[in-house]
Length: 115
Length: 113
Image 1 (cartoon, rainbow over the protein chains, first blue to last red):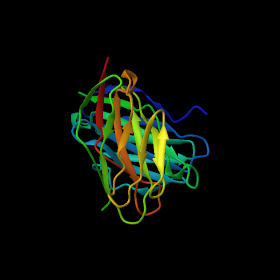
Image 2: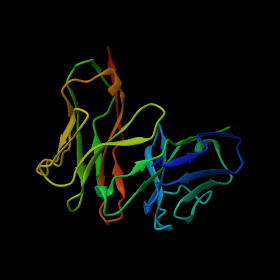
Image 3: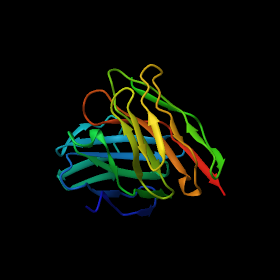
Image 4: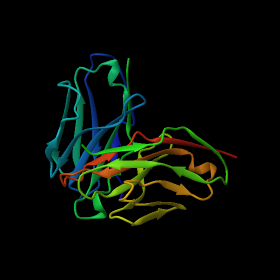
């Protein structure tokens, strides 16, 4: 298996622009998680899905952030409009309930810089 | 709520030294416990896990024992290598049964030759 795939790996944009991050989970996994990692706040869970349905979005910072999972093999995290404080590494992870005891498999991350 | 506390880093060691990274947790019920490792520029990878009290997880020379009485899951390695330099995260499976993990703040380990 190719593992969790994220794109782009790096993104540089200007304040006010829309940013879309993409994730392809491991085939067959039924949970998908979006995390944000910064030096100041560490690793934060933003939102997670089960069978394409959002379960908990309490970690989403504000209305500028939105996430979708239109099918089992694709998810997006969108920031509109972006701000410099959104600069971080964004990770996607997936897991399969009932197997591997909640082990999450992480993608390589998208490093976002908002100027 | 559930939480994980790790020792602050960075931890700096010489090659072949003994490593301990402390991790304690607060949780309702009986969570599974995990150590994840993040190498520079990469995502987190599962290092080891334990699913019940007194279980010992081990991998790549690292080990940790699930201690319910002290609510701890300390990571140890007898002889570290330069290639072990990374950030280590302790985590527990949150209550609610939704595969949600609660992560500690991470501990950076730097191993010098």
